[in-house]
Image 1 (cartoon, rainbow, N blue to C red):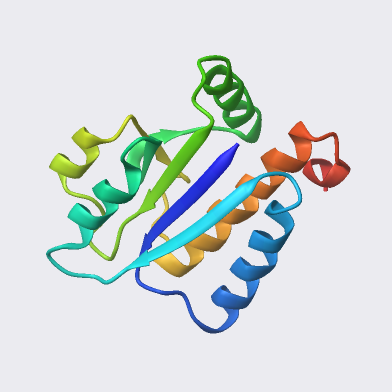
Image 2: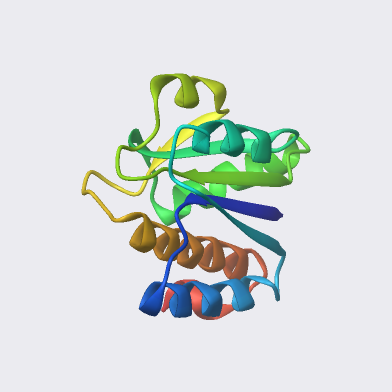
Length: 143
């Protein structure tokens, strides 16, 4: 799978370090690109542009939360349908507008809690790594 993670704001400090580590690990199993957009009126438009031609997944607390097994099954279904390019959209402090959500192919959640976009970015990268390593037969997913 190819992954593009589009996030409002640029993570710094510990989050940048952790995210870069997971990005490096993901690179062993598939392609990953991280795109950071500036918070503001044009952020959602830029995120929609980043998703053109990709299966777009809006990360939002109102979305469906899946278990790791649920994500794996969903990815397999997407792959069978020929959808191997996934773009993950992480909003800023106010989340995503209803219009943004409507423009996406699916809306998913990391759970009901509120996460900073830095933490959401790291958690999402860890889950992408967990799933890609599982699909490759690597034991990390059992850690």
